[in-house]
Image 1 (cartoon, rainbow, N blue to C red):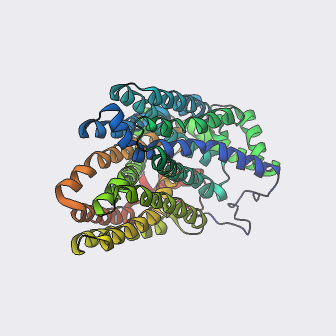
Image 2 (cartoon, rainbow, N blue to C red):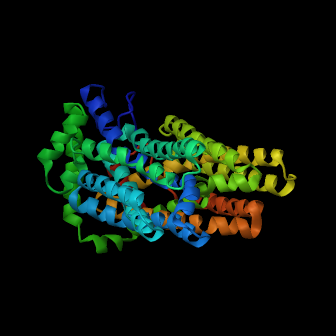
Image 3 (cartoon, rainbow, N blue to C red):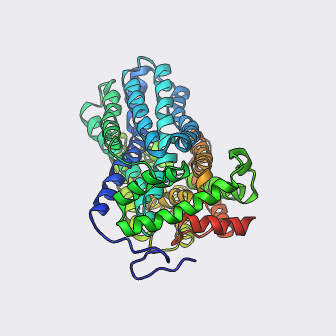
Length: 472
């Protein structure tokens, strides 16, 4: 494992000193993570918009489920396509393209005259959401100094859950005043146009990933970018390290399909896909998409459920904030295992409350408290850690493609949760549904303990060298 000095810099690199470049790095992070904000808002807004949307467009339960889940299937496709385009044309170029797709998808949804047209543009939005989920973490990981990588990459998760919280609050505020107006869902969706414009305009002034530039032989441009976000001494030292790795990769490169056939790369992709599956198997998005309906089933009135659901958004943001403070202080594996212990415990408590308590206010509040604690624990550990580990474990030459595959699997798992959770609750009840999540949580603990590597405190290049040796 890499040793660190008092400054936290990896051995062989000068410390990441503060200066004007630090502000520039902070600005880049803020602008890029608007992709995460859009990710969160567009996936969360359907929670409160679905009821007036159903009235306005005459949705049936079947078409409701289709309209909700089509964005997620689009995201799965977007993760694959976005990863490939990011490798081919650059991270910055891809984020600019995604901003335009967010705009087109949002306007199309707002103006949709029928549920069929709405579904088409929800799929378009899904392409942008999936592309952002595969591209933004890579961009942040490749532009951040190694000792700050965890915190900066995790800020994208903060923006994702902030976007979901914003969607819940906007929905609750609008619904409480104009809930009887059928077309009000269009205003809820239109709000997403503003951050899409900010993302596009902001990224016009942001640099390309220096690691991607080096991989394309554009060393002078890469050094110029590093000098924007590092001290001059640190920029030259990092440049030498990345350039050396790029030379090694060019010497050994035999093509994407062949690379994916290499045993150690294939093993890492399976680990990445497994992390994506188990992140979604916590059921976090059953709460993010159907939280209002779940709380109504637990015993809250319709109005109380809409308001109570905002607590899920609030504690989601608080959880990620706590995770951001801890993520560079605790080993990734330790924090991931702890997260699955907590989420599995709260799943068990929700199930027992639903099974053992008599119907009434007390039962509803117990379920709400345990669901909120589950959301807090999930978003403070597993949520940001999975995205961070995915940005760390893959070699540069297949990083975006491999993340695209892993995130594709993650989104398919997400879609299955979105499709299966409502009928599962209807068929077997809240208690048994959460006991299913308990079983999946126990399987996740075994998976993490046995196969997930530790990545904290190691440069992307050092991790690659270690994985080549370990899984050769």
